[in-house]
Structures are given as C-alpha cells and as structure tokens.
Length: 179
Image 1: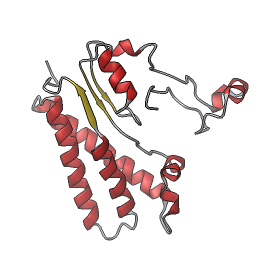
Image 2 (image 1 turned 90 degrees about the vertical axis):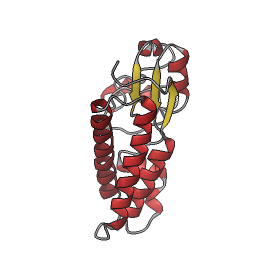
Image 3 (image 1 turned 90 degrees about the horizontal axis):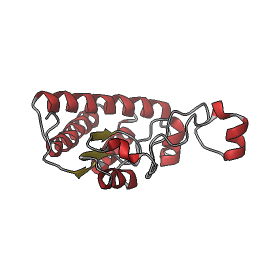
C-alpha cells in the first residue's frame, strides 16, 4: 500500500474485513501492517530499497521525514494473476496472465539482481543505481520487443515500462551504496 508495507499473506489475495480475518487469520494477512507510520523509525539512519508495490508514495516520504537517509520506492508491481487482472490485463484477448506474471517476475528478478551487482561492485550512488535500473529495464524491453516467439511480450513490455517510469528516489541521492 502507499502508506504501509504489509507482512506475509495467506491464501486469500484480498483483505475482506476484520470479521473474516479473525475467524480465519491463516487465510489472510498474518500481520496486516509490517511497517507503517507507527514504526517507520526502523528506517532511521538506513539506506532502503523497497521493492514493494506503491512504496514510491507516502511510505517513502514518511521514512525520509523520520530519519531514513535514502529510499528507493516503486509503483505498482503486479506479481500474481489476480493483481494482473486488477491492473487491467484481463481485457486483452488471447493473453496468458500466468505467462505474463511469470515473465514479468523473471525480468524484475534479473533487473534488480544485475543492477545491485553492478552498483555494489562499482560503489555507485543511489542516483546512479536508479539510472541503472531504468537503463537495464529499457534493455530488457528492447530484447523482449525482438522476441517474436513470445506472444505476451507487449503485455510484459508495458509492465516493465511502467515499472521503470515509477521508480522514485527520496533523500540523499548522492549517497554511495557502500560507505
């Protein structure tokens, strides 16, 4: 969420109300809010990369206001078929939502791992790290565009494009990853 990071979830995607939660807590969130305004100070004096949906909004600002040194937040990151359908991908005829989600998660995994590997090795600033996330995302988009065997490529390209557009940096942009 834009103002909190939720803990692990159970089998149900949507939180359907307190009564159902209390009746079957194992089917819903184990811990509804993992980090929120009440304990955001946990990020005080920390460098944070928060690969979580909508972490580029209120939670990022709250973290910086409460002493976080630097915070990278992201926009919507659909990582399940249900989230992809909520995102609006179900309206596109002939696409396998499962295939789109799997490929999108694979691409994100590659982008984040490669970006961190390079950035740590070269001791980049967080500003350079964000630029590299956008650059490698664009590389992956270009590679996907050429892969005519993969029918769902344009859906994944759209998700990757939105991913790179929505990454935001808060706090000291010139702080090095290692200090």
